[in-house]
Length: 165
Image (cartoon, rainbow, N blue to C red):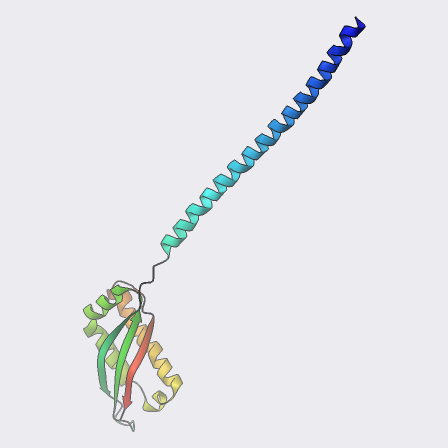
């Protein structure tokens, strides 16, 4: 009988070791699966959020320069310079701006003519004065587009001709 009990203990001891190894492997598999599922779920949400953010940003198209015909205005009679002649180019990356400039051309030209007529030649002789005028022109055009047009963005304003006499 003693001989019969010894093989049973060896079999039980060997089987217990195998069970322990199987339990450890099973636990590692469960941890691995849960970590993988968590990464998959969290990674999937980030990808969706990134897509939403990309869609929210407006796409920039090709640059388009739109010329506004030359403006000629009389300056203040007390100004030593008699008149100002300016040609403007508008830079936009959205084709809607060109349509807005064409559609609202009379209003834009009116506003800019009034703006140019208020300028002093002494201020316009300096680079700072011309830069300030560019900013005012940009704001004036942008206001018309936002109020009456598509609301698209005017990128920059350039003076291609600037003559004072």
